[in-house]
Length: 98
Image 1 (cartoon, helix red, strand yellow):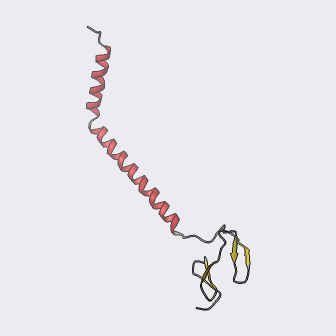
Image 2: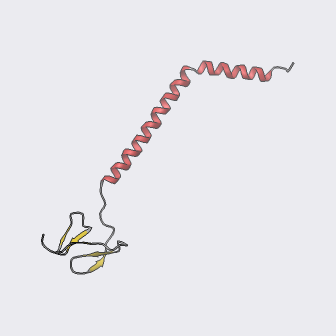
Image 3: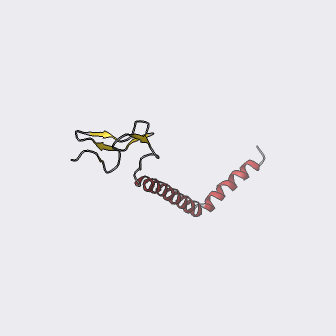
């Protein structure tokens, strides 16, 4: 491998004997092959990060929607029974004590 070649991700530099970091530990300096220069910005990151966040948010929203639909269906199916229970409780609370 020829000396002075950067890795595909730009984080490493081949000096002819081994791979050396192309960025300082604090990521403020970058090796340009001849000297250290101020880094213009952080090194490029993988573009998949946004995809994974989007998938996670989408899955969370899907679970929330499915739970809401199930709760609504259960309440709709048992609405009359629930109203009857509350009616009985209200009647019991309103009746005079013996």
